[in-house]
Length: 221
Image (cartoon, rainbow, N blue to C red; front, side, top):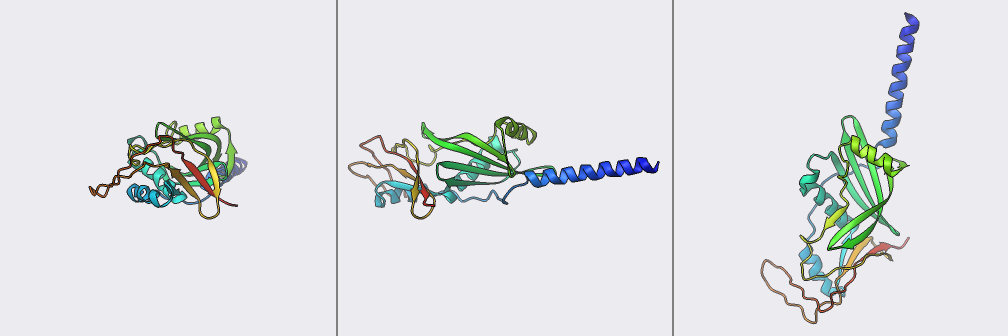
């Protein structure tokens, strides 16, 4: 009887240690939240005329855009995301997520490249982490399935609701910048004229050249 109790006790201890170890490994590297402020696109696009047609978005702006996509889309309404953040690094776009599933606090990191197609920012994943550990796409998908997030990681961000239809955006690349970490979206060359209309403080743009470029600008390391 005593040996049986010892075996049960050891089994419980091992189970607790395994759960604690797994919990430590998969927990978020940093604590994130879902608070966000909508981007003032009117101001940013208006300032493009003072910056040679470049609309600049910081990492913070991109984080707010990611959170807004999650918070306002019915697709993510029941997804247990408790925090999110975007980081730009040389040639890399990183999206971090905090999730809570029962007793499990999970950190997910997705590394990807970014493309622009049909006025939509598209993230193409090339690497994954769960907590601190790099994992295969298959393992990542199994974890998403367990969390109820299968095929529901936000990978696309439509700009139609933000950028006036008169502004054309093409191409993406990551560059270095001496200070700050920004996403710069040149809409230049702009029109031969700019028609401003004081209606709801909206600035209307016209473009003679429909081949402007979008650049991701990254701080110099």
